Length: 557
Image (cartoon, rainbow, N blue to C red; front, side):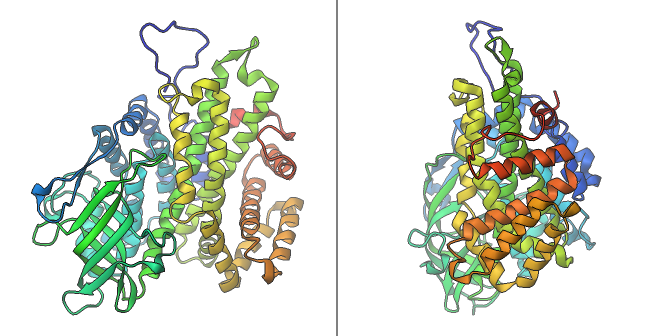
């Protein structure tokens, strides 16, 4: 937010802070996408959460949580091996309480205790709220998403799920560093990667030895090192380790059943470029205990249920951050005057903003469509879309966000580069992480290629959805032909991985645009995408539509 000292002259052509705005009511694209994809029953709650997430008070909490960073306290008095307690600014805990009160860590799992069918549109409603929570402050979203996604893994071991689910579903945030029995709610973290392997988790060296006969649901002693342990203040972690049967997945609690601390030694917190309110750690296990989830040797397949959901959230978060950057840039340009006119009235700036607005709309529509596929568990078409398009959407949206955030910062000029004057400097440092964590760009493309090779029937279902775009839109047909031509060349398939992922994203966006966006918006986006092959920079292509009309849709003013 823009902040000035009492000595700063007032009314000197400064834009007011973009704060105390309802992030739902001011986002026509989010509203339309959430309703269209199935979240109509959640609209009142989304409107309420939009006011909370966009309040000046909570945006200020985001600033504080990223200014006063988490600290690791190696306090040996708690017993065990070092252990380490992470302390946070109160603002961080307040943000966690807000998002957990909204159910962002658990809302899609309520039916597991109620014994009913999943609520229609539950994933879309959660994604829409998560989209706004990331705009409020993105770092705290990490433990929220891991707790939510961790349930998908625990479902593989029903007795473990039964023990932990009641306190996962609780919406009262409890940050206390005490055994689970003394807490009202819990959060989950994750530890997969090691120094020598990174993405190649099958090269992990951490060892697991059974303590009580071995097998699913039993305790193992785990020894080794994790180069990244996310959210070290969590009450339990899903970790990978090598058992006799191969790489396996374990639930490792902070405290053992008898109440003593588990033998987890948090060595240090990572000094990261962004995502600084969220602690990420390096840890060692010294015969730390963990329950085997699923069978030995099935660790990657078991934990993929968690990873898939966190990839969805990476894309949703990036789309949300793009939206906030755009809204802040438009807001500034509507108030700031240059050369005798408001910035937004200058033709070149208007074209830049309008071009950005089209990409933000595309990202929002894309992540909400992907969220719908997670609600269609029993639907063959939705299952196919989820398999193929989760890595595509994460790849495209998360790759788009850093360039987008920089362009928004430049719209503000020098003040956009100043940490205490604008949120965009922090946002710019934040956005690269979603493209790197939970599978970098190349990993996403390799996942796409894997689906192309192993599940051709799923690919055909998704391509059929694109081919059914209204009127057989010529640009969709041309992209489909190019995609099929590249797929028919197996000798160059991997080298073309990024091209293929990009084509699938383009096809999905074009289909959504021509089906659901106003005709002039769809035409403006598609004509711009045609021209971007020659010059991809924002504002460097002629838009088919009226920039003022596009901006009015992007942020009603």
